Image (cartoon, rainbow, N blue to C red):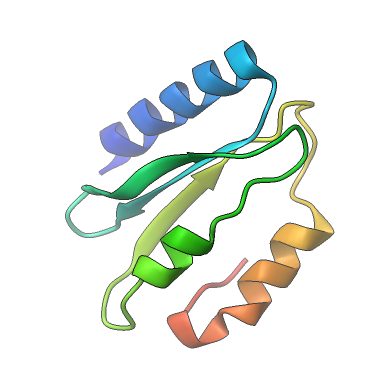
Length: 91
């Protein structure tokens, strides 16, 4: 699983550096398979709704997204996670 996370992280980082915008992707934590498409956003956000809608309560996920300016975890990121506590998402 760690290998899949690293590979996907590298892909997202390369996309972000090339396009100067945020990208997001999600993996099934048990299988290591990508869930849905890589999502592209704008310079300071990406709509992860399609990933959240694909989640199932009985599964666990790893969700990655980039920040083009290398900023830290944002207040918006925390808000999204707290809004989806029913899915077992924790910071």
